[in-house]
Structures are given as structure tokens and as C-alpha cells.
Length: 112
Image 1: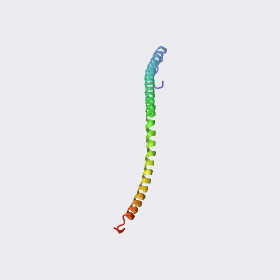
Image 2: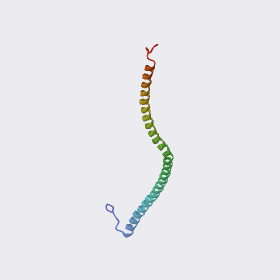
Image 3: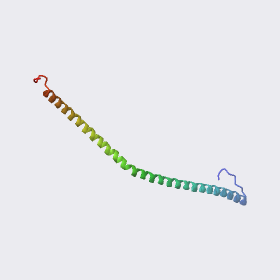
Image 4: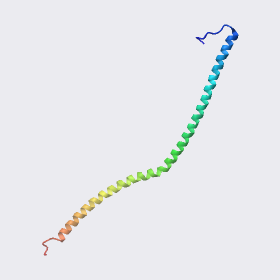
């Protein structure tokens, strides 16, 4: 209570101290009410967060199959590319062989 002039009379001192205690009690009650409001808000936020977590878990479960399909699709695309490269080689070789065969069978001076 430094800085406050306290009365010398015991009854006046008692009144001043009682008033200070009452103002402190009222401030503490106001803080207590504010804290209880904040606790309720925190509880509501935790409930909302729990609901969001449940929704996210459901979404994750539902999209897990799609993710697996896309991952499998990546493997399928790689396999198709390899198969396509193989077909290009086989097609090129077979067309070259056919061109040679056609040239030999249809040779221009074969007696025509």
C-alpha cells in the first residue's frame, strides 16, 4: 500500500482497507466470470476441432481408394509407355523386313 495515505483512526483504516478488499473482490469476480467465459469458448473450439478432425478422417478414408487408383494408374502409365516403346521397335523392324520382302518379291527386272 505504498503511496497511499492511510488514516490514523482504526475505524477509518478499517473502512479504507475494507473498501480496497471489496474492490479487489469485485475485480477478481469479474476476472473469474471472464475466465469462465473463456473456458466455455475453449471447450466449444475443442468440440468444433474434434468435429473437423472426424470429418477429415472420413474424407481421408473416402479418398484413400482414389489415391490408390491414381498411384496404380501411374504404374500403369509407365508400363504402357514401356510397352509402347517396345511396339515402336517391333513395328519399325517388321516394317523394314516387310519392305525388304516386298522389294525382293516385286523386283523390277524379274522377267516382266
